[in-house]
Length: 218
Ligand code: AMP
Picture: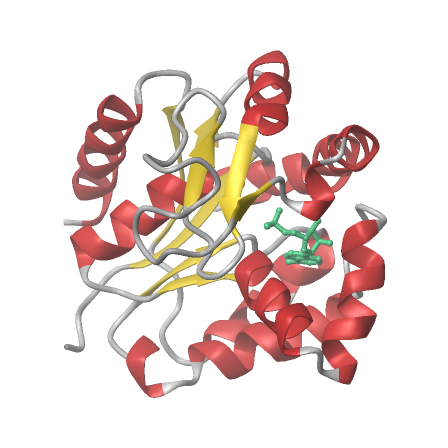
């Protein structure tokens, strides 16, 4: 495939970004490149890089831009991303946005999607979120797996994500307002932004996303 979509998805932590990105990636047949998932995989693998990344993540801090630029550039250069990709969690800072051209190489992104959910709603969502420790499938205390604590899909243990503690959540939301929210303007001034209301049932949000994306890139 050579003409798939190249999407960047933004949203506050807890906006439903992980769920919606997985659905969009499947719908458009492109890999879901989540920097958070990549970093958590490195932490699980126990590499030197993973140990370093964990320090930042546990503190609710962002990793340095140069590290993230290298990580994402390497991922998007892989074979499965040649026909398109969905980037989730990057860029997070002005420096990462400025480096976007270097990261995407000779096939630039088509559109940035802002999944908008009010802060009060996401605080409630994050504190009830539970995640499969094996493959990252997402649940909540309101929608638990059929067998308590066991992932329906892969059998992994379903747990509270380590950085979903209250202090880390507050730090991450503050960081989002300070560093990531201004990026939305960066994409808007380039005429590359579409905003979708994420404060609705998941299926409604997915339909709204696909409609908004298709309108802009087809
Ligand atoms: P996420 O799952 O997207 O919320 O990411 C979890 C954590 O990984 C963040 O709180 C950061 O510590 C780190 N992280 C993910 N993406 C980036 C990025 N683009 N730049 C810096 N740090 C990141």
